Length: 228
Image 1 (tube, rainbow, N blue to C red):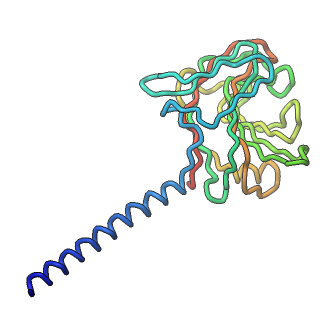
Image 2: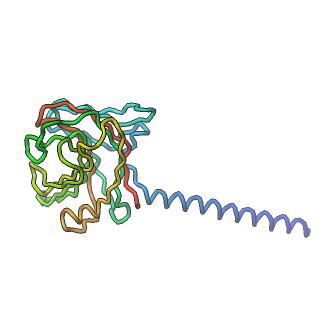
Image 3: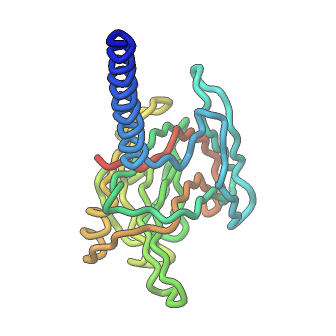
């Protein structure tokens, strides 16, 4: 009888320890899930949730394998179309936007602060929708510029200071080389618009050459938001 009770107590202790271990695993997984929000899982050969928008012609977007990794490729020949994903992002929880990109060539000779030169080898942008008050819509364009130095900021040539352009890469960056980016979007919105905007509504990417009628190719890696 004593042995049976002892065995039962041992079994209960083992089950309790197992439960605690599983609880710790699930808690860790939940914390990781909350601290990272995937938007573009191109490495998994997925474009789930991404929609296409054409402004002039069609930039060709497709998932391809490059250096053993699945990425999104973009080829524009006098065209401007992009991919966008409508998803509310809580910038209090995950303020950092992360991605990687590379380009194959520059668009030489453009004045990127003018309408006729508003073309970019690659751009990622975030949008805060203004609802019915569409004129209150705000956007940041993180661009890979061809003729503007890195870190320069300026209003978009078409919509003015409703969309601010930020050159994360410029002509000093090497071609055919991957660069990783991380931006605190909440801080950038505060700096550029003077408001503490706590959510964004859309993330988009675009490779466009409709104004210059030139050709350029770009490559995009996975896109995600993170806590830090």
